[in-house]
View 1 (cartoon, rainbow, N blue to C red):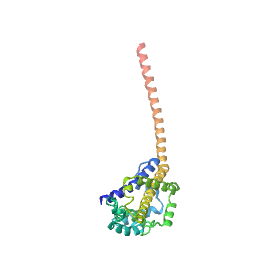
View 2 (view 1 turned 30 degrees about the horizontal axis):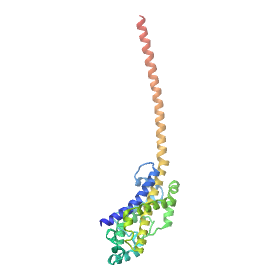
View 3 (view 1 turned 120 degrees about the vertical axis):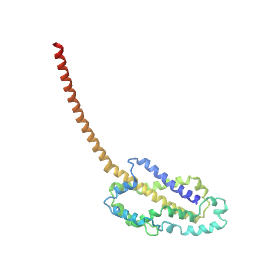
View 4 (view 1 turned 45 degrees about the vertical axis):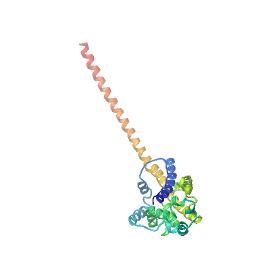
Length: 259
């Protein structure tokens, strides 16, 4: 179980590191992603679909991407583990989780996310994307958010994550632990996981930019104008006070001195 968790943790960490690089470039405000998302989907179909989906998915465990990607990997994984192939023959297999273990961990890790995506109609029961629904929901979002969620940015995030994962010692250690068919299944899982994580990161960055320009900056400008007006009035008040005080003080002093 430990080696399986390490493997998945490293896989997710590579995606997270790529997203952190995106966040550094983005900068801006610091708000909870759920709050930002609620602002960005307000008055769109997702504003009703997401809360309903989250309520429906509480405590549920549904079929995830394993159904669409484990097929060949599952069968080969069992055969390889019992035989004298790469998985056991080169000594690296014992340190690497089996394909079944990886699939089960991914399924557990993303069960809630996949449930919500299925409930809002973005994927079917087998984890396949429903592009028509995704496109319709995305086109209902503010133009600024749509413009920030580009395939180019998502692809760059995926490429960065893949590069970081390839540099990890465990990736090299396990490179020969699986058959070609198993590696194909694992690559598909990696692509699903990282693409999803990169999409959410790209959406969060675009949403943050929209909230910054549409709400935060106008509010800060309004507060700035209010402070300027207050400072101006305060200066006038001080000027009047000093003038009266000096005038009375000088007049009395001179009068007493002459007598």
